[in-house]
Amino acid sequence: AQKITQTQPGMFVQEKEAVTLDCTYDTSDPSYGLFWYKQPSSGEMIFLIYQGSYDQQNATEGRYSLNFQKARKSANLVISASQLGDSAMYFCAMREGSTTDSWGKFQFGAGTQVVVTP
Amino acid sequence: GAVVSQHPSWVICKSGTSVKIECRSLDFQATTMFWYRQFPKQSLMLMATSNEGSKATYEQGVEKDKFLINHASLTLSTLTVTSAHPEDSSFYICSARQISSNQPQHFGDGTRLSIL
Image: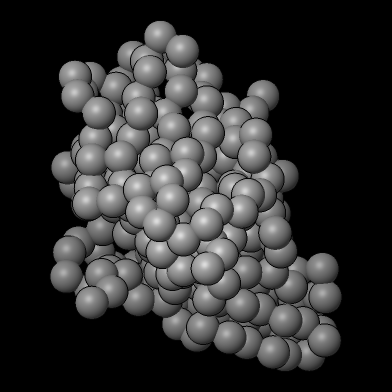
């Protein structure tokens, strides 16, 4: 079963506007981490932001913020003041933490392609 | 700078050739590294977990004899695609994780493998 769901395959956003990328997850593990990565066309995976399941506050990193709604199992990424360089594929990922088998493994969503226009 | 180095970044070779891809953690020790495969416009799919000093753990559906993984030191894991065929053409990317539970995985820059 799909554990990470990103329902937006692609979206356009105008420069300087904010954009929200959706991510929902499914787990019964009480300990987990949620991550967002950016993958430009060159292929490298760039870490953006992390939210732990026990974190009380929403994570923020510069122009990136994570809207963490635990009860709804959602972890949406908000990019404020979009820049042309933000055009890339964005992946939401989850790492479950309680069992040895799952330790360290990432499960990725299908990704959302963001295109920032002038 | 990059904390995980992956080499080579791009390989083109003939069908039947074996190709080795290296993944190195540059400034930390990684007892565990991960290998992913990514087809165009698709997500990353975990292939296997590479454990230093022991056998790799493969995900369901991944052929162990096809994708040989060796993790001989705390900073190096290698993935060898044996007798590669055109269907093995893909983007392969490794990652390594530091000990702290809230540390993100650090990814290599990936290897684009094209089998002719």
